[in-house]
Length: 75
Image (cartoon, rainbow, N blue to C red; front, side, top):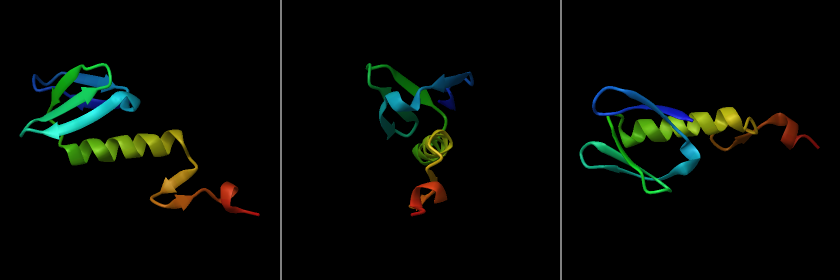
């Protein structure tokens, strides 16, 4: 889940697994798999960073880009 800010300033929490696309138009439009669209103040770069950070938090196997947790690399 990631927190985003709608254009009206209200906070919204989205399930990042349901994000189908993000488009900068110049505002950022997030489209979910169900077709709902949200216009937010964050940039696409910031949203990608938040989603990546959240995924790393949920899946500790991947700590840094390309780096696997030691428990999965030890023989």
